[in-house]
Length: 96
Image (cartoon, rainbow, N blue to C red; front, side):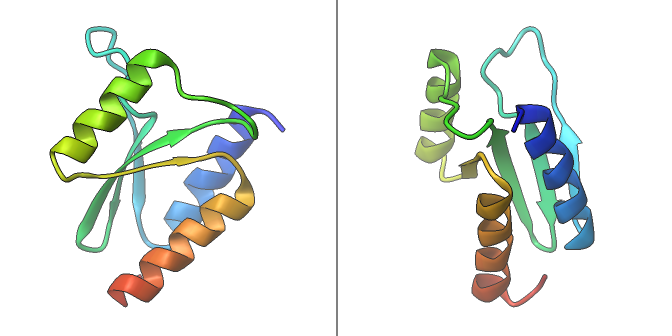
């Protein structure tokens, strides 16, 4: 499975959950997550990878910065991980 397959599934799953997954591309801010996701009352920075894919050094820096700032950040690399992430949000917030 390729990263684009994971991303296509992710976009559809987020939309089905009532959210929006914005694509963020910034040449001046390398390492920023692939998607900024807005769900009911929540914003997430989501990095998508193919199964077995790893974060690049600048992506690890961005992840650490999001953790330091107390932001919602996750890395997802399969349909199953996407489904589990959305299910977990649903059970925590009760608003999806």
